[in-house]
Image (cartoon, rainbow, N blue to C red; front, side):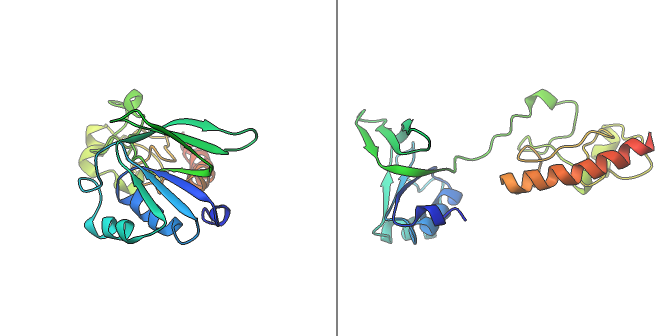
Amino acid sequence: MEAQPCQGEEVAVVGGGNSAGQAAVFLSQFASRVHVLVRGPCLAESMSRYLIRRIEDSESIVLHPHTQVDALEGSDRLERVTWRRLDTGDRETRPVRNLFLMTGADPNTGWVKGCVTLDDKQFIKTGADLRPDELAEARWRLPRAPYLLETSIPGVFAVGDARSGSVKRVASAVGEGSICVQLLHRALRET
């Protein structure tokens, strides 16, 4: 779906990891030019060699190292993106109407730390991903295991990007939310 509005257009992908590389290679099949913007000096530290080679071999992908987005412009939609070279200060504005942010995921879960169980990357663990020892440490008091999207606190659910193992897509988060309504009703009937 993301590729359809990119047909024949310039697009920009922000990020230097494998997800950004995969997006750039995929979009290069549709877009006239794919600008890959990375803050670091190169892709070697964060991307697989195979993807780097695909990017280097593509005539429609342009790598912009030491670069960050400075401005987004448009009236009723995105029309232009301005980026700046961090090492020289040079700025460039391009007619980019599709911008893809692939900068990684650092969940904003600090506010629940110590309340619910988090994984090693600080995402909220739910359902079958919660190990028996984690449930014991959290003092899980129910005779049943946690429901699919239920945290280590009975009746408290997590959906979307902050949840460990989630797909990290808006449509998936919406689907999880709708599933969660049913599970929440079930949990409320238990009390």
